[in-house]
Length: 243
Image (cartoon, rainbow, N blue to C red; front, side, top):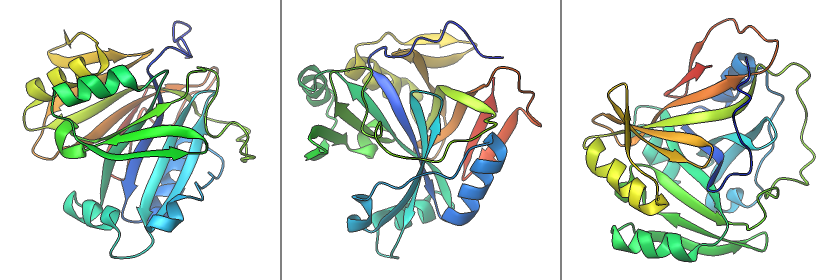
């Protein structure tokens, strides 16, 4: 059942969970069938950098995005091969102002790999080697506005899920990476059931031991009145838990 305590519009806002897929067609089919989602839409700017993508709306605020390679030379192709075919690649996180985040990023040694204006909004991407995954910070001061508000996307008549609740990042040193995220987002490190985590707006980021640096898990919220066929699904290397 849906959790009525989830608060939308609480900064920072996890807007997109980005999943690398070595096989976009298969991953898209699995995503739509598992979660009752309609066909997603594409970001037209990504084609110019050799990247395929499909973004699915999940409720009023969050999105699941699949990214893959249009050419063998695209960096995402090499990344997917490195992690065994696919996995959690990054997060797009909306913030009201970039200044404080960039100061804290510099203090923890998180390198900037992109600092550009997209759709009249400034976005900064931080190096995945420094934070375990790609972290994109999107400066949009209005919590009820987002890049894709005007996109005419297909709507699912019977969605199984309607929110993203948490993500889980695997790292060889979860204690160190949790502290970096804590500093970057000015959020306390907590230990819940033996797992390190930080609150990120209304959602949660967990940190677990793992040999590969990537996002390995995602908790999603089951829509009211729906009883899913299963509470566990794996899509392109990411384990989804339906709550």
